[in-house]
Length: 73
Image (cartoon, rainbow, N blue to C red; front, side, top):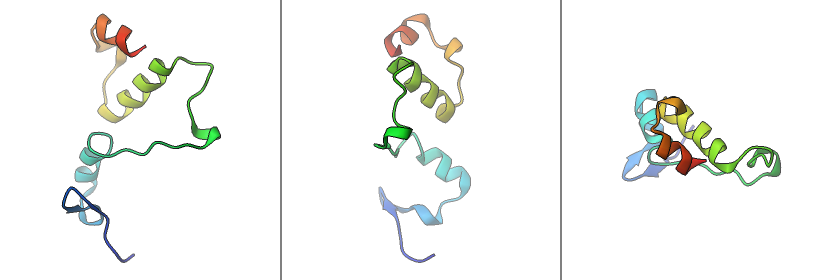
């Protein structure tokens, strides 16, 4: 592979796995626009966002305060 992917002055191709984990979700994300990968209309938007955030940030929605959970759902 050749070339560079510069984000905030750092070449993403040269980052370690741990450094990339810190960048992904916290500093940079991808929002897919394809119908098969979009939000599911069966579930609330808030629940789907909480699920995505919990996977990135490694937390349990149950550990959130009730008010925060309500705001997201």
